[in-house]
Length: 220
Image 1 (tube, rainbow, N blue to C red):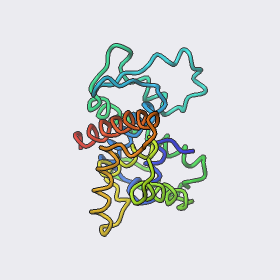
Image 2 (cartoon, one colour):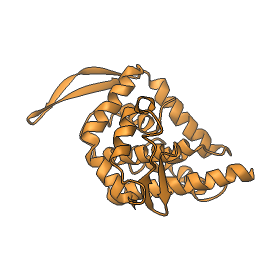
Image 3 (cartoon, rainbow, N blue to C red):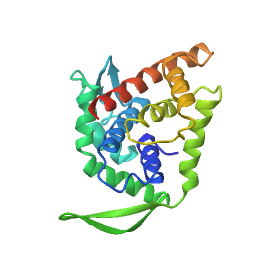
């Protein structure tokens, strides 16, 4: 299973928006990393502020995703939380180093392939293309099911839905726009899960998705 930043980057490659300098995508990936860390309960949320949990000592580093660990270690420690917006901005500035590593993770999963280098000024950049479009289409199909069918989204789907627009991606067609906008607002702001226990988790997930998406959008 792909984590949040891997999913978002794969969608960006599918839309041919990942092989160039892209500030909205960098902000979106930063938000996706924070969202994944929140979902994995590796960082804690206090209102609109974030801080990391002291988990590195209790969890061997080899069991961590290296990109998530890198981001985790640059977050404020317990008791020193910072606004989510500041965390998004700080992580987006590190994306020049983190994004290539995320890309290599997708290459290792045989989802991307290198297609050569191109020059931009004094710098050379590797180009990549998506090798399994079905993987990206499956993510889009899951989102369509959430939007157009009465299914309760899981936390990662919630986060992806909240990050699509701030990351500069267009998953849905123009004709679907009005229905998508209405349904996404409904999913992100109202309880669509009847089970009480599931609803409690969904409330936290929605709050997290709104906070991360709002923080990314505010920096764009």
